[in-house]
View 1 (cartoon, rainbow, N blue to C red):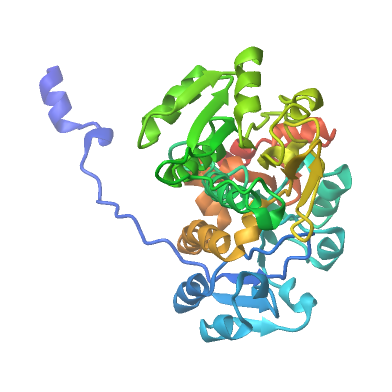
View 2: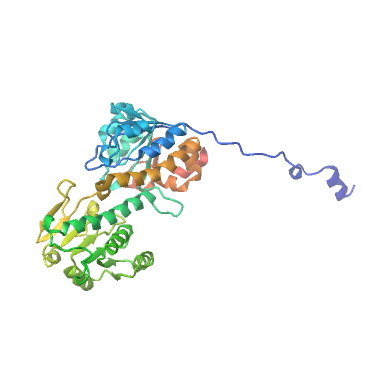
Length: 404
């Protein structure tokens, strides 16, 4: 028998037609979601707006909202109740849910109320954490996602960018009011009018905060100059703005001349690690125009002015060397309703995806940006940097996913 006839008589099984295999639909999960009232200092935002809650409830999910959780963002308990949420008077009832979503990291008191094997979605704010924070979560085998580490398909951090847009825009509106005589300012209108020169605005930093501060200042008619250490960031800024502005890399002499001419200086430099670098020394602040304004958006990382001191929304400013300083961290909480809508727009698709995929484990398999935000899974630290920083055991999340 030749080879050809042999092949025809005993065909290779691997080459035989197979039965068609069709993908079966994923089994959706019904979420049991708790939204507690934020207890952190100056935190006025809420993670989900009533409209988002309505969408979740209409899709079969259960949402429990603590009474008064949205009042600082001008959302009433009735708004949430009409959206289908359950209003809880007892905090314990909120923390009995399978999933907790909040803006600020949980406090020790809140972690004591959490039950084992919950899913937590909140900010991490790594600079403010201690080892006990992670140990408490590890003991309860919590799965935790930090929204300030999650990335989108463009490898950007969408919620941080959104909050930075708000901070940049709002910083200029705050400064415009501080420059008025009613707030002990110089009485200068930020944009000027016909025949009167506009205010001189200097922005330190060409990131998202700097870009949106520049947009707002230009929209009001001010003259704007932006400084940054990165020429590529300055080039990107020029491409994004509707008109050309003056830009410069940070050179001491050029920076000093601009600061001395400025009516408003916005500090928007962000540090990749540790504290924000101090760019403006006290001796230079002493030479600034009388009643000029400094808005240090970087104050939550230490500030980029040597004269900066932490202030609050209730007492936001102080005057030093004749210069008005505004150094409030968490500027988005000043416009809590807008910030809450922004958070809600970003959280809602995530929560729907979790439900559609049948739980967080299935979504982690396909969503790499979500995996970058997950720093703990079932009590195991899955972020290498956190594990090394706090000397805690590390577990590779990718290996965990491949083993499921």
